[in-house]
Amino acid sequence: MALLRAALAQPFSPRPALPVRHPPTSLTGSELSLDFSLPPHPGVGAPRRAYPRIEATARRGARTESAKLRNRRLQKKFNGTATKPRLSVFCSNRQLYAVLADDHNKKILFYGSTLQKSICGDPPCGTVEAARRVGEELVRACNELGISEVSYDRNGFARGDKMMAFEVPVSQHGFLPR
Image 1: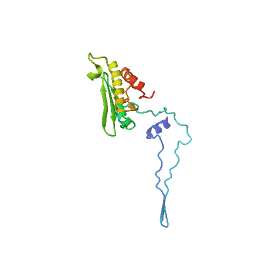
Image 2: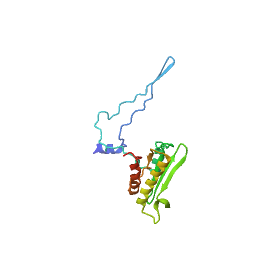
Image 3: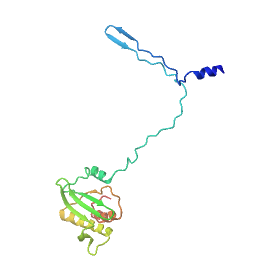
Image 4: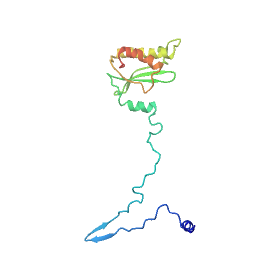
């Protein structure tokens, strides 16, 4: 019991305090030599504690990026010329827009959308049918301009009904690799 009282009276220290050692300095000639070695850790050779495994994961949302950022990055790859223009397609929830662009001369060679009266007709047809007509108009304009190939840039949009309807006449003409 006396031993327990003596242990409780002393302050608790999880590790014994290491003596403060000043590095010995010895001047030999013109050089100064310092020794900064520390005594070995008291737990060397002791069994390690089991910690929970930590796994490195990617940041949340690291693989999702907006279509606009992806388009800007890919425009470097799909740079259009007069002989091989860039066919850029934008597909919103309701409409489809297609542009043939000559990026070197900064010119638009063809523009077509499902909103144009000449394409959707009177009375207006559905957007899927109008998207197919935009593709047909694009093929007609390419024949008039003497364009035999294009670089296709769909701006990262998924191939939905409007996009598929647009691609059918364009791929039948041989512009899209399949």
